[in-house]
Length: 119
Image (cartoon, rainbow, N blue to C red; front, side, top):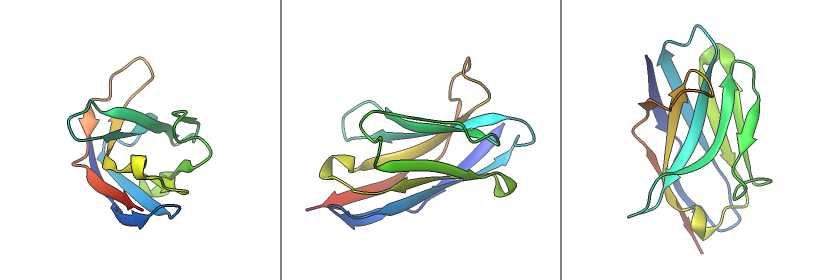
């Protein structure tokens, strides 16, 4: 199993930046994926990006391409989401999640961190 803790959320202005962190512990001795998701009030969670741990291959939702960058520090079992050029529609609770392969579900989730972008 993998345990995940998100941090780094907060308030940003339109056009500003935030960096979210996702610290993983537990079963991190093999390859796995960390994904970032976000959820608006009353809406289903939405995929944002994922990264392979430790390989580093990435994939992004179209809505964040060119603005967000997912990265990792494999030695620290930590993934990051650098959020630039923030828009009001980026306001959501952001969650990180873990899975062990593309054929598996994201079965492990962090507690979430609030991102608010104001104009």
